[in-house]
Amino acid sequence: MIADHSYFVYIVECSDGSFYTGVTNDLDRRLYEHNSGITPNTFTFKIRPVKLRYYEEFNDIHQALIGNK
Image (cartoon, rainbow, N blue to C red; front, side):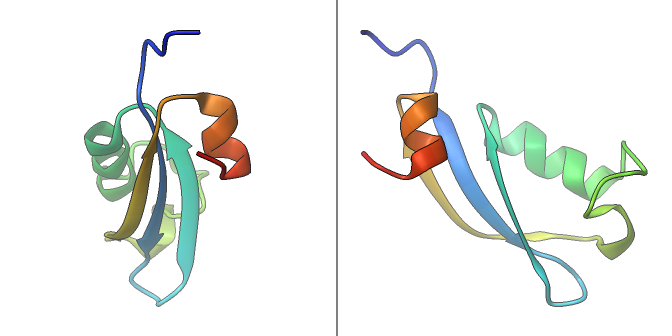
């Protein structure tokens, strides 16, 4: 199977010191969404800004979700 996308597992640190982990196919867009507060009912909405602390790129969404390369 040839990968059409890259997927990123990422960890951000929130302004209160907590951490949030997510998976996305567009890391820049997702960080923008976290920091802009587009969706009020998300975990990070009230604890912005967030800072990217870690990310890892995968070619397969299933690998990203289970953490195997």
